[in-house]
Length: 229
Image (cartoon, rainbow, N blue to C red; front, side):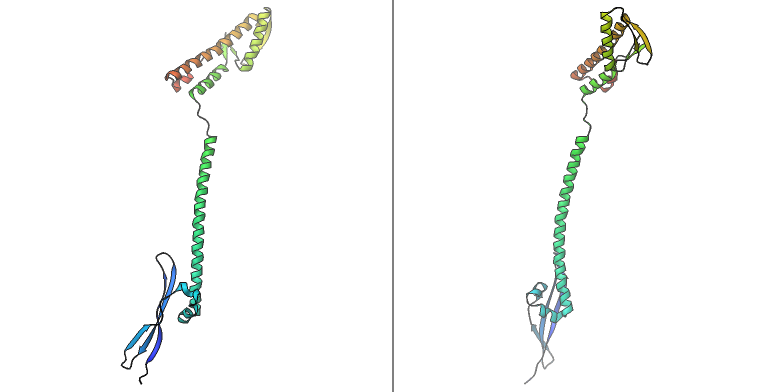
């Protein structure tokens, strides 16, 4: 009887990174027979064993082929790969959350900017502001500078009333430049009339500009023209 020499040999041991990024390993064992004539016959001893089956009862088999240290390293590599995939998933979720948070922050910043942005004044508002500026800028009577501020208007009105009630009324009045002059009843009434004329002229110019706005002929250059001195 002829004795055949038989042996088991590792046919393939492969550790790879698949196209989808999954790490894997597999191996297959062949049984060989050395025939008397020197030829070799072989057959598969087992099907291809993937790394995914290491924890399903083939760990010992894998260790026998690769060695315990290598098999352990591959198993740990698979665990690390799984942990890495989980971490990448969480990172992707965090990145999405971060992007959403940044979008929300940008939206809030834009809203805050809108709230803090000075309102654009209408032509009517700008004309009214310019009228008030001219109104309180003062006027002159016989070379004397007269204060036309709101407070001064009230004081002049009071003095004019006194002058009307008493034609002999005399007072010392502080002019816009700080000088003090003595005014009799007639002069007081003249001052009051000058202030009244100045204020009315300011309102008249405002009305002219508002009419221009309504007619569509208003220009920014008109805003500084035509006001009483």
